[in-house]
Image 1 (spheres, one colour):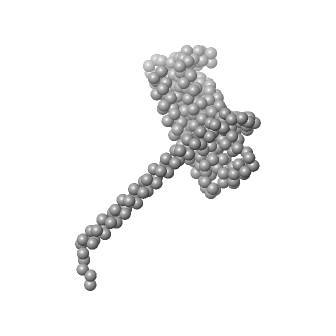
Image 2 (spheres, helix red, strand yellow):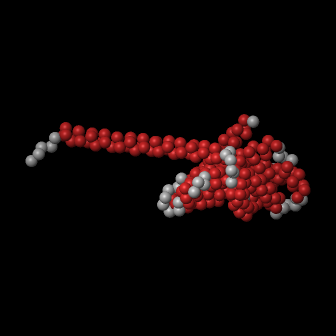
Image 3 (cartoon, rainbow, N blue to C red):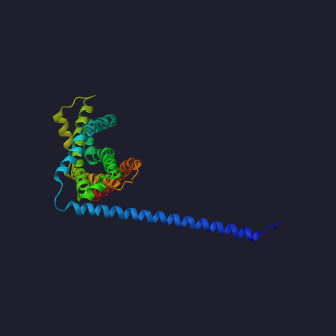
Length: 278
């Protein structure tokens, strides 16, 4: 019968703990390395897209088709969103302004809120959900079915044909959709103001635009171009780098929506800080 040796037991425990520490260190190092590799892949992807954007033989027909896909087919959703934004802001703000006897400031307050913040951000988030997921799912399915590989074999540049056109279309159309949503939001505010009041359209627009300066409009418009570029880049990158399995299409669409929505909020935060310094 072997005798119990506490020294050997302690050494064995210490060895097992050392092995666990080494395994955890290796796992964390692998995660950090994978994270850095993903960041490098993103920068290489962006660099290649920018390079192909300014190269010859631009795919103008595909660009127009993507503009129609992104802009025209998103109008019903943006229309409903814009009107509801104006109605909700009006219905929520009117009682508070009424208690101070400042109902006449309601059109200007809602117009400034829509143009500076609510319109661009909410419209961009809606577009991130619809456009970003559509790009991720479409390109992901093309990746799974090896259509992108077939384009490369047939001497067709998939970056120029698939990615550049979608990114530029999103960058151009989302600011137009934001302007459209702002206009409908102001009309929705007028409709909400007439629910419990009586304001003519001419008087309402006079009160609304008397509180809007050029500094309110320009930064809000500029940041929408960045919103569109972020949504286009993220949706295309997630779809273009999707895996081979069929479930990777759903993952690409889902991650495109989540990441583009998060980046839209981060870009908006940066834009607000820059605007505040001006």
